[in-house]
Length: 123
Image (cartoon, rainbow, N blue to C red; front, top):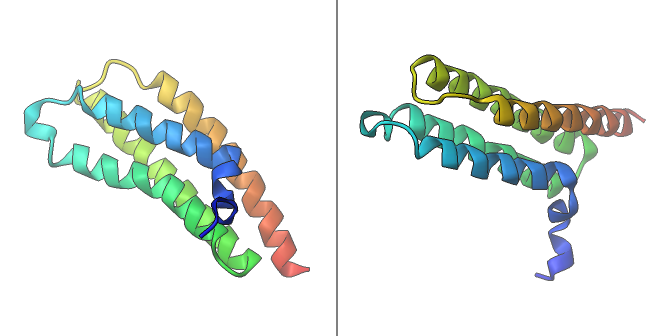
């Protein structure tokens, strides 16, 4: 496969989702040992799902499929933020403000793309 086949890498939303995932991984490092396999594991799966679904949708054949995978990515983003809120509530994290700001930006971008590809699939 040629590098140009991986066009999702050029998407700013995918790049920001990768940044967000790295940020979540760094936050998980602060968790106590008892949480390394419970909430931390769930957080890793949810965070990784965000850029993964953006990329998978980009590789799909139809605009409708792409919009669907973008929707899954947004759901995973919300799941991740909910779990970060739990971690903060449990005292594992002092602040999630930076992650929250990046998540809000990613959410807006995903919503815009979803609308675009939903409209394209209906035309």
